[in-house]
Image (cartoon, rainbow, N blue to C red; front, side):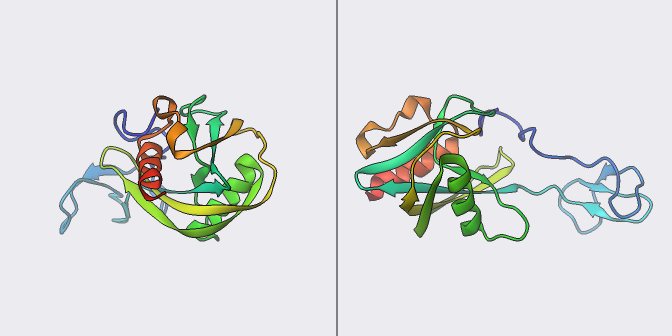
Length: 176
């Protein structure tokens, strides 16, 4: 499901049982809270459901940026920059570097923050960096069925994967 096209994406795991004691969770409004939460009636644990964190990079190479055509769902066949979930034990910037290497086979150097993209209707916060390609040869992978270089004037806007991708690329073109 493309980002921004409906309710919280299916990538979220909504717990049914308390991770502290295993009792079934109930949806109710705890004291001192302003909304309903998943609460354990046995031990009082509150299971907060928070957005997932995604890190991405817009890899700049001599005369353009590298984008990939997604080889997996969601938005298979659409264009985006390398991005993916931040894992425990790495920083957001390290995740952006790792995702770029895994998805398109190049190493990058982060040169600055492009932006943070967050929308109330989605369960994802996307942090996107500007980056310079430092090595490697762009290549396809399980997640990228194609890799291509685009100048600011030839980004395939009608084929862009997600709202956050579109917004970040618009920010990139405005600053380039």
